[in-house]
Length: 180
Image 1 (cartoon, one colour):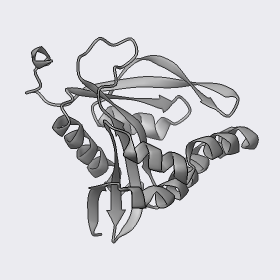
Image 2 (cartoon, helix red, strand yellow; image 1 turned 180 degrees about the vertical axis):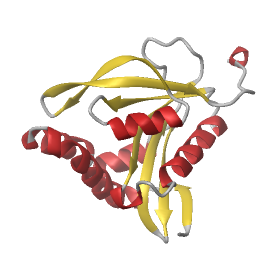
Image 3 (cartoon, helix red, strand yellow; image 1 turned 30 degrees about the horizontal axis):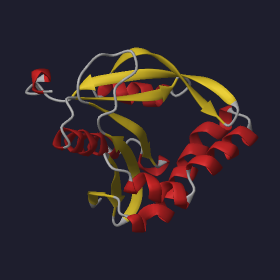
Image 4 (cartoon, one colour; image 1 turned 90 degrees about the vertical axis):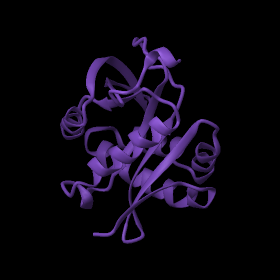
């Protein structure tokens, strides 16, 4: 398995649009109203929206490719305070998706390492994310990746307001919050 990681460019918007829509639908459709899932996908994963997210200052999309094919990606936003947590220089992992065929291969662990390394390069001392309460596999992965639950928040899928866990972790022992 030849795995590589790189930052997305505007040329990746269409591929990210398709990948994100498929990944979101794969996880959310079985336990949600199809109309809500499709509305969310339509609003969130258009090629135009993906291009705008790639171009947004302070935000990067990290791609994981296996033999040149997109197998996972994460959207990282720097200088994004974690709700209810007073830590300086936090980065938000807004999305973290690995396609099902790559589950259990170690790709997610490697993508998380690439994303957290990128966050440190961008000046973050910690990262945070949200995870759907009905995704025990992801919650377990994040716990193994050093994330701790720091609260709850909501996430709206279409018109359905759902509960997400708010998770955070420090990035390195050398991160000095006094630098901020």
